[in-house]
Image (tube, rainbow, N blue to C red; front, side, top):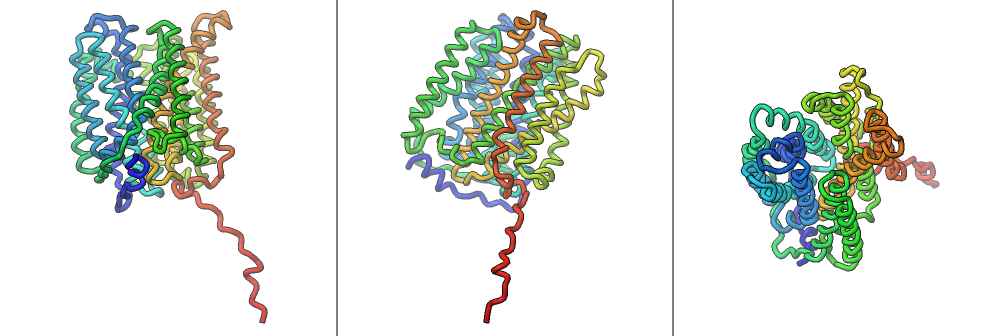
Length: 490
């Protein structure tokens, strides 16, 4: 029995209404993952001193995590179908916690990099499997609400990570950055066991081993190469060579997937126009959004001369906007539908990114906070809508494939976004003849804002009523046939 036939036999999960506890439990685990991936950035100097290495070399640990996630995301759908989504999700949390403990007790660069790789293995399963569970356990009518609850930690985590990391490192010890994951993870495993519905796996589901290797090389090659080119960790040629390996592996995988009866990532999913546009639009938007956590703290610290903690408090305003979105997203989608909301949110979100570049040291912090608040709202509205649209017209048997493709595209697009931001900061001073300062960041924010706006292009060609079963935006009734209304001729 191959993987496709297994997925087709996956029994639907019966639910009695929308269980709000389910996305909250899933979201807590994702918050732990997303915050942990950024909280480490402010603690690199302290960790480097303790394990007797340099902060630049230690950035390999950040890259190791991203590479691990990229390698194992493609297999997440098969794992959930084979062993059961609930079992895989709880196991993923356990692996992440073990990796966190290993990070806390690492005494060398090699040990720390290895521990981060182990964490990435758990993180690679948590995000896509959580979405899979939510899709299979939630009716389409409640999917927007569920996705809103699940999306918020992904947006808040990267924002609260830097100030939390700075606070813990300053007043306690960097080891606690990882050790606090232990009680959170154990609580997540317990409540997931109590609240998540049973989703048994299908015995005999076989894995596409060759496809796994090629897809893993493609995704990890792109993520690692782009990370290296945007950070001064290794020579530029290493990053470019790795990107080349990733691209070549991707081409080989495309050829393989067309011939294999059950590829590990089924590219035939892109024949669905709604799914295709949701992935394309979300990927383009993340090219710009992925640059923001990289650019904004640097802007505040280098141009405004703020401390990491002060800049973190400012950027946290975006989290407030994300929380506001949760209350309004379902109503906005019912009113306008996916097409209108995504075009509007993408356009306004891009404009607000460009607005960041025009902040100055004299700009009142209240004004900055308000702009970032609205930016967080529209960014979260776009991602909640796009994430729900991915599954809006996907059958239950294909949900595992949809989650794997969405998660892989997310990792690659965020890495590209950071690489774009880093490249702009390196190249802009060469062309302008100016040192890194306000003008450079104006250029950077303008470019990434315009790139984000490109996300609206795929949705211009989408049916305005696409995904109406999920958005609640109903199609107008068909016009009455005047001929049919005539009385019969006697």
